[in-house]
Amino acid sequence: MMIDLRRLALTYQSPDGEIEALRDITFSMEQGEFVSIVGPSGCGKSTLLSLIAGLETPTAGTIEVDGERVIGPSPKIALMPQRDQLFEWRSIRDNVTLGLAVRHQNTPERRAQVWELLERYGLSEFAAKRPSQLSGGMRQRCALIRTLATGPDILLLDEPFSALDYQTRLSVSADIYRIIRQEHKTALLVTHDISEAISMSDRVVVLTHRPGTVRAIHDLGALRTLSPMERRDAPDFRGFFNLIWKELDVNAQ
Ligand code: ADP
Ligand code: MG
Image (cartoon, rainbow, N blue to C red; front, side, top):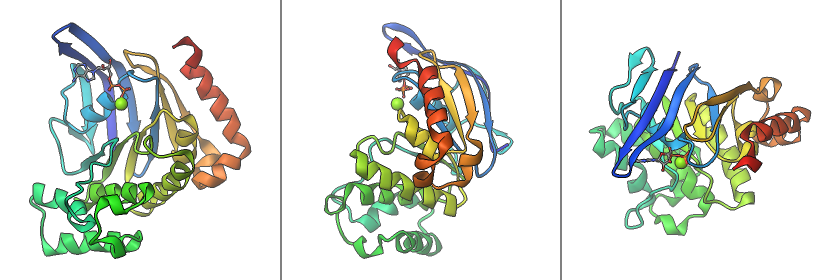
């Protein structure tokens, strides 16, 4: 298994007392799999990604990546944050290579690989531009390439499209989907958008209200072979949407 979570729990200690964020989370992911996590706001989705990224320590339970216990950050795993966090005073090229220096990977080979990614995904001609000169969709692509630059096997994406308007979100999510598939990455996407989860992933994990526990796991079956755009028109799409909608129990919030 690429990712193996067993009875994972995390309770935050804060000045106001304890906050139980996650309880008894168990699921695994295979290499190359794309899994989405949906759940109500505040149910511990970002916490779960922080745990897998090795940025938080579980209160109970275990996390294994590629058969090894996660005890801290690892180059195998990259977290793409909610905001693109591009630096305005740096060019696109310098933004995407930023992680290399931090990880002591700033070699000519690595820089050439990053350049190849910029070319393959249509950003090389914007290399000298500043982030503000790019569209929202291109910024997101740029943020993904920066995340890919250090060569991780696993991508953790925390609501990466939430700042984009609806039309842009559709095309950017299709774009990001294609890049993740072509680069053969294992991906875990957090989203509050049920349609987005169904259109991008192989399986959808539904979490309950805080403390987040696994409410259901859906294998999207035949949809898995379709592109995000094709899925939205497929007959199974509505069925999964209604099922997950009920499980999220939106009215109970
Ligand atoms: P989600 O991403 O699903 O919206 P989070 O994982 O961000 O939820 O947060 C889960 C719960 O834990 C929330 O109640 C949040 O306020 C709380 N929380 C998150 N981070 C911390 C922290 N560092 N210290 C204390 N409480 C936190
Ligand atoms: Mg969050």
